[in-house]
Length: 366
Ligand SMILES: NC(=O)c1ccc[n+]([C@@H]2O[C@H](COP(=O)([O-])OP(=O)(O)OC[C@H]3O[C@@H](n4cnc5c(N)ncnc54)[C@H](O)[C@@H]3O)[C@@H](O)[C@H]2O)c1
Image (cartoon, rainbow, N blue to C red):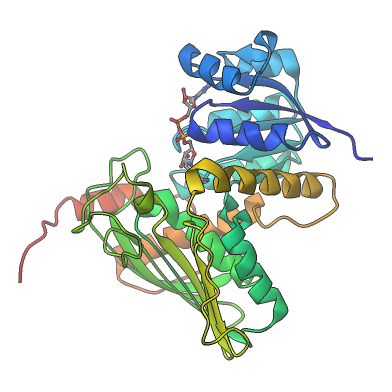
C-alpha cells in the first residue's frame, strides 16, 4: 500500500475548505497535519467545521511549514498570492503542491512557478476540477466510447469574466481534445470593468484556437457570451446568483454527433445512439453537493499521479499551456495579429498594456 502523505492547507476561504474536504476524504492517501489562515476568525470557523484539533491550527503559513514539514502544501488564496507560497514549498522541500486557478496573474509569474517546481521536483497541480463533475464524467464517456466520431471542433463559453472561468475552460478544451496543444490563436477582447478586479481581465474575449491535431477551438468568455441559465441579466454582473457562476458550457462536435456539459450539472449527448432523446442530467445542487464530490475524485487522482500510478490532466505543465493560450488571446487582440505558440517570452506585462488601451476606449453607439 502507498504511503500516506502529510498535507497542510493554507487559506480557509471557500476554496481552501473544499481542498481540506478533498484531502480529509482521501484518508488512504493523505493525513491532514495542519490548516492555516492569517485571519483568526476564518481559521477557527473552517477548522471547527472540519473538526481539526487546536494544535493543528496556525495563523502563519511559514510557522506551520516549519513546525509540520509536510509532504504536500495545498493553498487556496487570491490570484496575486502565488509565488511566495510556492517559494515556501521549495524552502520546506515539499514533494507536492495543490493550488487554485488561475495559475497566476501574469505569464512571467506563471513561468517562475513552473521553473521553481521543475527545479525542485515538485509535483504541482492547478485546480481545474470541474472535469470531475458528473456532467463532465458523461462527456468523458461520450469521448471515450468513440460515439461522436472524429472530433473536429470544440467550443466553450462562460459568463463570468476571463480570469475567473476562462482558464478553466481553456483547460477543459485541451482535456476534451486528448491533451493536444494549441499552435496558434486569434483573439478579440473588450471592456475595462474587470481590469482592476482581484481576478483582473478584460470583460470579454472571443477566440479561435488552432490545435496541433487539426481540431479547431472556439471560446468566448465574459458578459457577452450566450446566457444559458436562468437569472436576471442585461449584460450585467450577477455575482450573487449561483446560476451566473455556473453559466458555462463545453461542447464537443464530431462527425457522428456532439455532446455538451456544464458546471450546472446539465449535459447532453446527441448521436445516432441517443437521438432524438436528449440525455440530460440536472444535478442542480453544485454548491451544496456536486463540487464537494468532484473534489474527492480530483484529490484521489492527484494522489495516483503523486504516487506515479497515473497521468493527471490538472498537472502544472498543462495549466501553464492553458495560461499561455489566454495570454496569446490577449496579445492577439492587443497587436491585431495571429499569435503562434509556444510564446517565446513571458516578460511582457500584457495586462498593463491592455489597461492602457482599454481604459482609453469608451463604449459608443455607432
Ligand atoms: N476551482 C474552482 O472551481 C474555484 C472556485 C472559486 C474560486 N476559486 C479560486 O480559489 C482561489 C481562492 O478563492 P476563495 O474564494 O477561497 O478566496 P477567499 O478570499 O475566500 O479565501 C482566501 C483565504 O486565504 C487567506 N490567505 C491569503 N493569503 C494567506 C497567507 N499568506 N497565509 C494564510 N492565509 C492566507 C485569506 O485570509 C482568506 O481567508 C482564487 O484563486 C479563486 O479563483 C476556484
